[in-house]
Image (cartoon, rainbow, N blue to C red; front, side, top):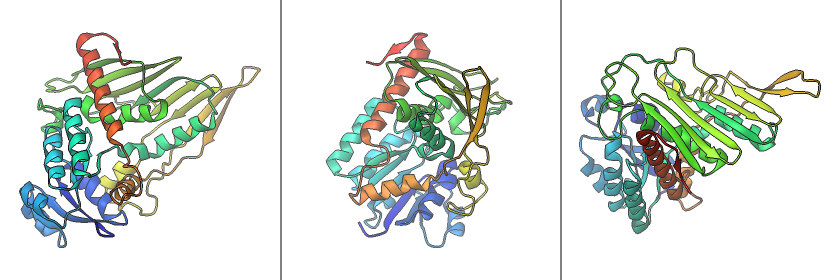
Length: 347
């Protein structure tokens, strides 16, 4: 691989256009070499220095392409990852990694055989609010944690005509936001003893799930991840309660909004969260004390920088194959819990 890794991007919908293309273009050591999209004519007018294809085969056959980023509908993730690995490319798959742990296992085996890096896009490990929470927990300010509530609520009462809200395999909120919220809890607390999940379709004419509430069971701790589509007044993004106090964080990381507005990654103000979290503690007299917590700076480019380094053999991929497989198993266990209406022990 040359000093600058040449990246081919498959898919130019929301994930490809808003997230991956700008992040690739603004991460040192990476270059956007090719895009595969049905919008070929439009992209030919938008890009003068990128190869545009309307089929995958030419990209995979191009020896100049070092790595492939897959930003397609979820059911295409594993088949395209397998094809790219067999073509000798490193692979980054948008979440979810696959539709099942069986598919994930096959992709990981192909990566090992090809001696190539494979990873999954867990950019929200680099959200400002998550990084700030992680720092609070590492500092021990809250003491032993008893509850961690992670909400990612939206108000979208109308079902939109897009694959994420269709009845296609891998559609629905559990496979859209579930991978992010569960991955963050695994990063903070490790593998749980069990999961209890409720997954539902609440909106009229919904064709896939648009609500979930899942509880991860740990000894002495419950981590709750929640997302809804009919929430006009959302709960705090994070509410964490421990023996020595609580941490509350309103609002969400700003990077997605910045990308949607066309702000270049790394521009002034990039990843700066204007809403500070608060630690709430009670003194010996029962009086409440609140103080603001300095926010960490979010930067999704850190994910791509770690991917670049892993391709160079200079470190682990940002999400290891083992972590990707573990998360797929947790997603499956959550679906099993919801389908059967019972807690699923994880061992």
